[in-house]
Structures are given as C-alpha cells and as structure tokens.
Image (cartoon, rainbow, N blue to C red):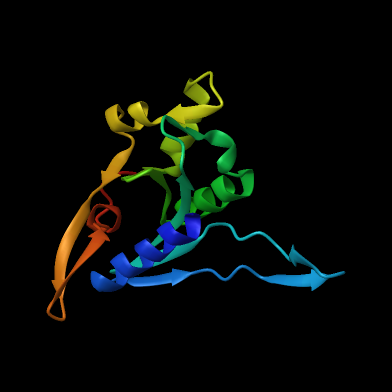
Length: 163
C-alpha cells in the first residue's frame, strides 16, 4: 500500500517538474529469506531551488486513525537530522480507506509534539483534519502531453508551507 502512495508521489513530483529521488532499500538473501541490510533514514527526497526536503511516507487503510507505531524511531531521527542541517523533514501520511484518499504532511518537530501531547497509540484522522500542524495535500488534475493526470499537489511541501 505504501508503495502505491510512493509511486503516486513520484509521478506527482515528475509531473510538477520537481527533482525527486526514492532511496533504494538494500536487501539480500540468506537461507532463502529476504533480509534488509540496513534502514534508510527516510523514504525519498525532493531537491527544489537548493532546498533539501526529506519525506517519510506512510499509508494506512484504517478508517479512523493512524497508528503511531508505523513511524519508527530511526525515521524520526533521520528527518530530524535533515532539519538540524538546514533541510526540511516531513512525515507524509496517506489514508486509503475504501475509495477515500486523503493525505497530510507534518514537520518532524510538530509530529513529535503531537505524539507527546496525546495519550493514545494512534492519531485520529479527525485530528489531522482539524489541527493546523497537519497540512492537507490536495489531489489535482493537471494537463500534460495532451491528457489529464490526477496527482498530489506537492507545491505546499516545496514552498515550506509548514515547518
């Protein structure tokens, strides 16, 4: 499911003319089982006008909330390191419940503040809709090469809408 969202983000970035790169996940095999050799600090990045924008993308099919445990400590640390070095680090959350597609992005410092302020194991989607720290990503139609393509509008992410 996350790969589908990541593919949509890659298409969106390409369509909008942004430099986008997905980090490869190094893996090998041992005893006929796939093993991951190390963890990446985040999923992908956009480079826009000299600004490095790291993104960790998460998807959930839950109808009401996003599990906090889906975001790993090394991912928060990786996004924080990007911000500590002058870039932007965002968690991008995608809700894929039946035909409902919604997405929000949130800066890593704001994510940590949200997690610290709630006494739950998940963040309700209704909170993401009402809390200004969660910035909605809109779906837009864009004409390219004579055909209409539906993409996520990443312009708010690259414009630094929320830090």
